[in-house]
Image (tube, rainbow, N blue to C red):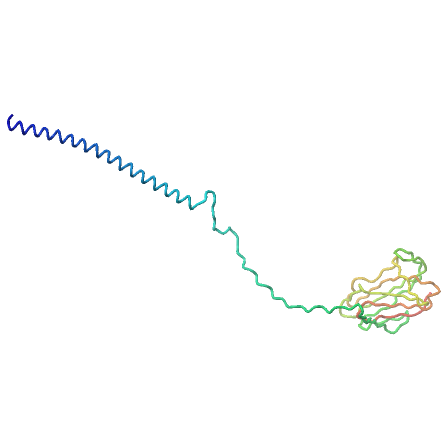
Length: 235
């Protein structure tokens, strides 16, 4: 075997060994690469699982907390307490206390045919005194001979006056009160009387014929003014 043959043989053997070594290295690299890929996949999976558990531990499924204020709602500040002034208690009454009666003054009597003044530019007069036979209509009324008294009021003031509280009473010669009747032609005062105007009303009282020689007719239109009194005889 020549020197050249030895060299060629050595080179050929080296090439074969290098080929085997390269093939082995390639198999090892492939295995190492596979292991690295598997390791990276495991790390990624563990990270994802850890993140999922952390998210689950901080939130409750199905529960939602909203801190937003409902649309249109307004927070009203508390109203300040109203300041009130104490009111003193009323004076207690006494069942044994006697309250003095207030006497309504009656002006001097005038004839049945005269005009009586209340003292405030309002006057009264008897426009007509008519004997009739009254028919009972209301509770407590008794049919019988009666007098229909027509009263005329004149308002000489500058303001309207109320006639809603006007009262007319009659007392016969025996000092007995005439029984008022509500049937026709009775038509009492009501409403108001304008300034400068006149108003008439009719009041009916049962009065026995024998007790008409000295009758008294009292007229009042307000509690703030005195009464006027007419006295005289009639049929």
